[in-house]
Image (cartoon, rainbow over all chains, first blue to last red; front, side, top):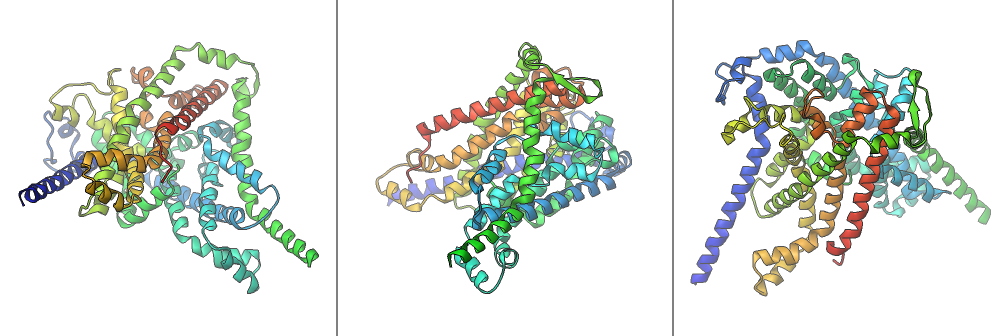
Length: 280
Length: 295
């Protein structure tokens, strides 16, 4: 009897400790975002008060005005949206096609060609970056949307990932479609591709988040401020307002709000999508 | 019959080639040609007008006799040592906590995962501000006056803290999916045998999760050896502390795209890949000692 009581007590203690650490961790994770918001609403003078005020004494929006007037935010949003859009379309369309072929069709040199995909996945992207840049420079294609999309026109990882998905579809489904008179293309587009929805969604999220966060490539290839992405634009803002943190915070906030809103809506798809794509 | 089948097979093959053509062509142009070109560049000297001439081992000799380069290599390794073990331990702890019966599990998961979806550029900006030596909130909380980002002793540590903060949620979610695959029956059996929680962790949880832990570890190490964006955003090129924090990829970026020494930069790139390769191979050999694939 007594031991059962102490067991119950220790279980309760366990529970309290679990919540304590989870909430402590959550506070540490969220605090920088809160601090970003609070700082962006302070005047420069207030942000440099020692000790700092927690809540802004008189919330001001001038920092957002400064950020918007010193960076062409409209262009940055558009460039980032177009970059994401094209990267996602390319990754999904080309990887679906190739993934299906590698999973379900027989052809010569299949092993070797699939090897090309696997080897690419193992190499860090930096090894391609100088020649990729030089190719674009030679064709005078830098400072364009195409330049931003360029390294992501095809996706070895996406191909590998969707191949896994097609492998999981029973062969009989394809055979049935074939007997119903579908040719290979129709079998693929009408029957098989719709069955990979979850994986395509995961690849979409992964591609979008990666394209949005990438810094080195946009910084290298598009040096014209109107052709930058949110990430590389932010890096430029840092150079302009080295110590004016309220403006920098306002700019950072503006850069991440669209993604944050998407994350709030599609939270589950984001977490599962990105962790599903695991490997990268 | 036989004839017909080969015809169908041929048709299938034609479709297959059509369907893989964009991807394979893209890989050849975007990755395999650049790969060879980077190797070639590392043995060439960049001239004016963008031409390059064969230079033998010159870039590698310059590189191996450069103090800056060795410092960058050490910074990269040190950054990896600072971030990976602590980051993995925290991620495992978070995963264990999330695996317990708690309310708002998906809410917590989403919060921990948050840094993964926002651009590293935006995230580093607020950390720069929080680490500010004069007005930063971190010094206020600690009641100290540490010039985190301008002191060679603390600058890389500050970057490492941001890196851990950014990656913990992602790693935890991966580990959590490994934890959820462990059958309850093992714990029930252990409880009957009278094994305590700590004993259960070391005899059941850890061995069972070791394959997931290994994959996450490899991924995290590779990523931290390639670190660039975070340090670039936290430490300006004008910051005197730069030589003490710049990673190999930061040095690569500066040499390739700021200084215009593409050949030398290519050599740095080759070295980084070698480093990543060695570390990964060591991990794969080492895994036999601790990763459990039996179950």
